[in-house]
Structure formats: structure tokens, C-alpha cells
Image (tube, rainbow, N blue to C red; front, side, top):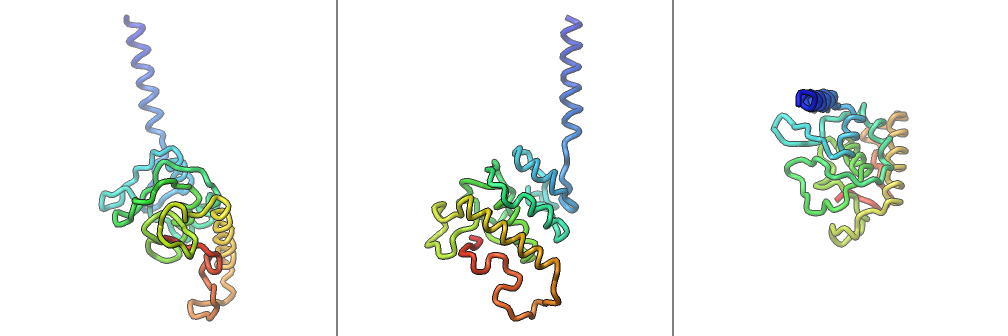
Length: 178
């Protein structure tokens, strides 16, 4: 009996200690790798100062790391949206699309849309049949990567530059955020 109790205590200690080593995502200074790991496993629970489980405060410095996952079409269990966002159409949530949503939100300075999905630009409504296919998502990811490479160079352009597609990764793509 003592041996069984000892084994039980040892197993509980191992489980407890292994849980202490989980990567924590700091809301104000997040790590992209830890965030993605938790999204894939469905364990992301970092709360904002307001007490909501939300996307942490990524910055422009995080864009290259976020874009590494932009073509990942794997489906994740959930994605933390702002409390004002709609979850009505969250049927199939792809990691890459969510990473692009974060990049777009950084680019705009506010939430890119009310959901983590892109649709074809001329969609009649926001039904799932208008969401991008995996190949279209990969095309959008390539457009964001090209935009970031161009953005990083700056080429002396400013927000006043008169160019139809300046600073808009989805310009002429046929895609838009819903």
C-alpha cells in the first residue's frame, strides 16, 4: 500500500511540475512562438487587463514572426477575438488566416474586421461559401509578405504617396477582410 501511495504521489508531482513549465504568453510583451503553440493546442487563455481572453499586444516588430505562419492552413480550435467581434461565422478557423488578421490589425492600428476570415471581394454576404480557399489564403499570405518586404524598405514613401496600392497588401487581390 505504501508503495502504491508513493507511486501516486510521484506521478502527481511530475504532472504538477510539468504544468509549471508551460510557456506563458505575456499580454503586453507576447512571444509569437508561444502564442502559436497555445493556439494549436487550444490552450491559449491570456487575458487582457479588462479580463477578456484576447489577442495579446503584438507590434510591428512581431510582423516577420507572424508572417512565418501566414501560409499555415491548419485548423485551430479557437481564436481569441475582441469582445466586440462576431463569432457567428467562426466555423473553420485557420492559423495562417488569424496570423494575417493580426498583421492587418497592426497595419491599421485597430481590429482588421469583426472576424478572423477573409472573403472574396464581391461576396454577396459573409456566408462560409465566400471564405477564401486554402490556395487563396496562401496567395494572400504571399501578398502580405511582399507588402512587408516593400514596407521595410520604405523607398522614401510616406502616407501622402499617391499610389493606388501603396500600403495595402490586398489591393487588386479580389480578397477583403469581412
